[in-house]
Image (cartoon, rainbow, N blue to C red; front, side, top):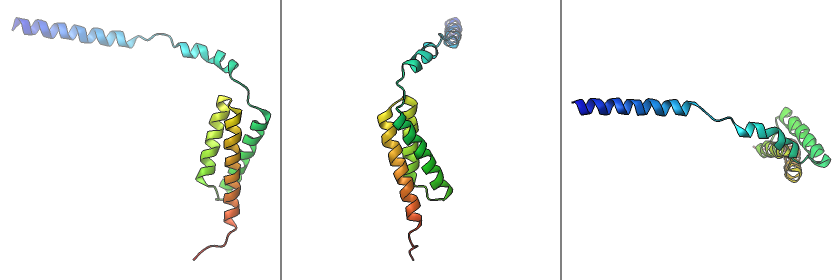
Length: 115
């Protein structure tokens, strides 16, 4: 009986000691590195920035006309993510896709309805 009681008490101390040590955390070094990382991030090219702006406008227009394809919306999200990373090539690629699919959605709206 005495051994069982000692085992339970020992286990409790170990358990509480484990909880206490997990509560403390080290300072987040990634938060300190973030400003330096953003300063080193490559800038988006002017062509990519213009393509992204055009894609956002095209997708907004298609959405307003209820002619937005989901592929245009997905491509716009990918373009915005690439722009956030500073990837001009990917931003340009996905922006052009988004604009084209938004334009095709608007064009499709003028087609006659089928029966």
